[in-house]
Length: 233
Image: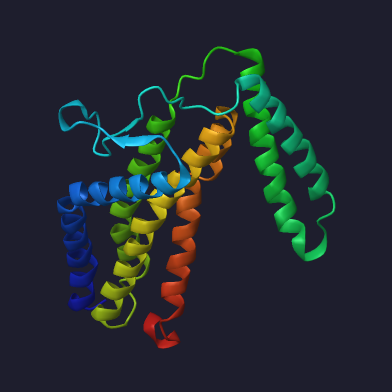
């Protein structure tokens, strides 16, 4: 391995990490504005928190007097049970090339069923709030963005391609997550606000950080596929 490649594998991740760390507050500010803008269109009761009362970088609150939950836990559990039964029944019809989708649907059904068992045996108020759920999603997304340069350095930067291509592809992936992460949190808030907190476990476990990692793998595969075969020699 040439010294130039080693320099790229070390220098590029350090530069990206320094940039991401320096842009942390502006990034969260963009995410806050993004959520507030969409909240007005979708009638979510989100308002900016006073600077002095902010508990996190997101700095959002629910409007005074607005409920942060949709359906009651009992009604939400009944709806979730119906969804699980219907989804499991539909998965039985998936055959042939759709067989992988059958396994995916069944995994989601099992996770949701376990969540229903939790609410059945522990019917006390759910300990997690919607905004804390959203903040956790955004924090996990930011941590993934910090790890992306390191992951790219391990598998993509050693390729024999121009450093400009490596910078452009890394930038595109980071920009994609910069938009996707707040949109993901917005969808979660919308579902939980209008449906039920019963869906929070399956959203967090299957459509949270794990989903983000699968998206990164797909984007990494796209970036690597643009390199010629000779890039590995």
